[in-house]
Image (cartoon, rainbow, N blue to C red; front, top):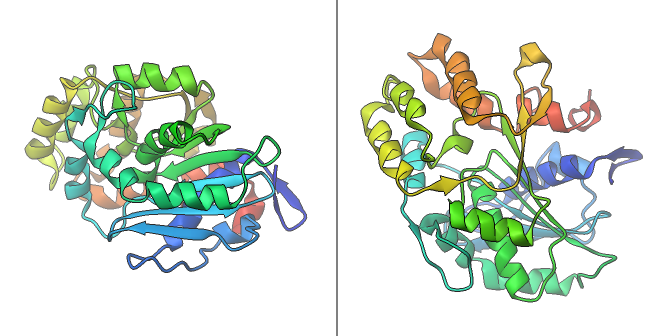
Length: 301
């Protein structure tokens, strides 16, 4: 259990807040504290930012729970462009099972040597375990990075992701879960990102997407193409229900139900979808991820 002052918070809350702190890394690699996330995590010493170009970054820090490796999500990019970037054919990478998302692998690879060095400097052990996390794109990078850490001789106790797109195909999922059988992935009601790249069963999602202004047919066609690549989510899903259902967290909700929830959430705002899509996806006090996973004390309530 992590600690916020004298208030204990769960490991999952700590890892989500760590994913939030990673957004404190600027595109030039300078790290600044991010509220309320840093208030919830007592890093000691200061965490180490690792930057790989303008858009890839990771924060490595020591906490009372252990060493946390938190990959930053996407910053300063247009939603449509980012979603289309998700639709990349998976590739074979030596040392990894199946096929993985090339963009996420390249992003991990741009920082991995320095991440490994930063983790080793904190002296990982059974008493000082390593956890890997990330939000959004960072969540797509996290499973790939966990396997690379393992390949480098660094044991990872658990990977927990938030709002993560899929990292690889079914063969990757099977090989990954043979190593990490306790992965948790939190996905929020109305969040599109965990539904991409599309799986083979995601045809209904494409038929809905094509009706959204400024996303529309182009993204639908990308989804249809991606469906043939056999992407699959990893680990155990923790699905956060709508505010009307008091942010109840359910396990392994069928994808068709998740798509239905996405459509129901978006339908009243179909003319201006971006704010609605963003609200379902971000780590912000009062929204689904923060409300379901963190105690009110994290947001000062």
